[in-house]
Image 1 (cartoon, rainbow, N blue to C red):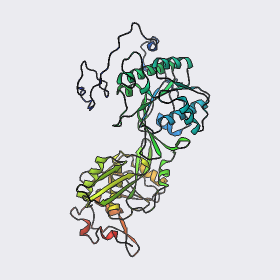
Image 2: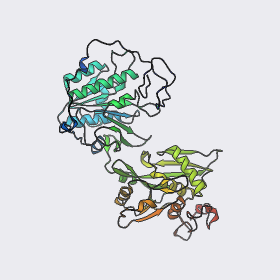
Image 3: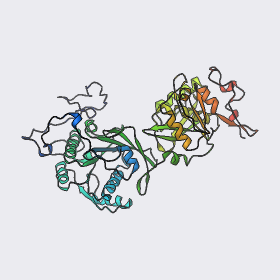
Image 4: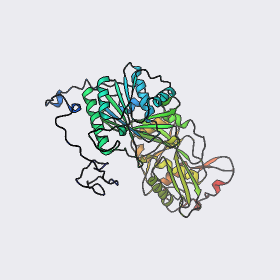
Length: 486
């Protein structure tokens, strides 16, 4: 059986033969258990009839909101009864802490929570609850890995919320393979799903991540559950981002931002303000990038450091941005915009441990590299966004109005954006907006340097998008001059 797509074959093969799978892992042997006579009790369902879609009522699909606004945002407004939510993340990111906090929220409303732990003892979970300042009233602990026993306890207790940590530790006697195998995880996911739908009780399960960043177990597990949440964190970063990879009850583009503290994961209601509070004014090699995550815009600081390389092949280090995107942008900036980056080591970083995936951060990233290369700070009130093509053209990005409004809320006064985004844009009062078509025009508009006479000037007017052959050393100042002490 293929662990990625769930395709089954009658014999062992090196890789999955299914078209479009693309898995690099060999097939896993799965022994088929003998069929039992009759229908198992956990599969028993009430007889159903064919009904017309228009006659189905959705009034019973209510949500139970949680005290955490960030959790409600990602879940689509709250927990839906009878839903199965899969929480995935790397080891140590805070999955168990978040699940225990959910148990605390539900228990505070007077409902019981059954917490099934297959990895930690009840004493370990008690220590974690004490660190969170939660005594544990209303939370029932069950240290068990046998799937049949877990289902029986769920039936007898009938809690307001069920938590399983983690699904890779459960095993069923109906399967001959060990816990965590493809067949065991698929069996555990199916039985928990059946129980949740029949009882109308929400079930939260945690899942491990593999080395390549994918969810351990069969891919069919993600198809079975109703919601798949990913808890992400940069190494040594205090912030956690909760992202919905799948949500049958809400949008999959919403994200929640949390900060890991001694009291657990705390909501960050204004991530932009929290991240920019530690920003150093006038820093070289730093620019602001408004990125859109779901229904919110986040203002992140993109940092770049360039240094003459002592290696035959200069290094490229990407923290928080796509590595291949960094290679493309450095090549375009060097070939089309006159930035001498071919002999420079380039190190990029997104402050706060966030990861940027959308191309709107292309322009601020290159502006940060240019600022570091010429040792010239950008305007502290400046922000920029735009996609950069291979010809150094600045392409439009969606939701420009939302990005500008978020920056205006934080007091920024100057914006560089694609010229195509100016159409229909409502510019906030007091903000200067510069529309550019090429990367050269963008650098010419914002890059400043302090001269010995004590004032800041932009690059010469001759250095623009029309002078495709000019470089900085051909003008009245060179990059070396910008590094002279004031």
